[in-house]
Image (cartoon, rainbow, N blue to C red):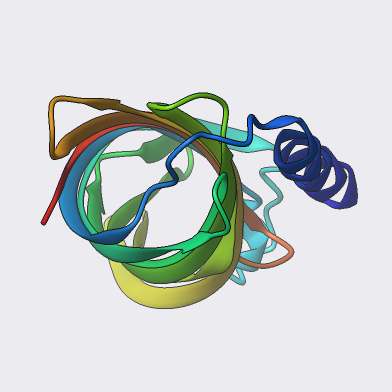
Length: 195
């Protein structure tokens, strides 16, 4: 995780240093929708105290989300903002050993992050993101299951570009570290509308 954080932080600071002086930064309130791919990795013996180890299991699934936020300009070429998000994922891991059938899936997520970015030109900016999210996971072992919620540290980086007067398109990568046994890498694309 330290390597991922260093890469994301370095990209954000390099962008801040290299931006043109006359770019107009993102500002004001916005809402949006996004969709993409979640890729979870889990160690199953930490989910169930069953004595069996399923190290390095991974599962992919589509994810959709709605978000809302507010950006403030920092000078003429940088911006800082806060954002809240609600998402629903279809990512699921299923393993059948013949003796045991194990399934764990991600469900709804709620989170809040801050972002710091800089404009590359008049319409496009790059940013880094950090914050918190909480996800409900549903797990089953041999037909018996339960659900639980876990908190995660979220780090990410993205690129956003304006088209039209109030609309923007963005692509983003995020890494969520829930605990010692659950991680998620997510790539998403979204559209935002600014008021």
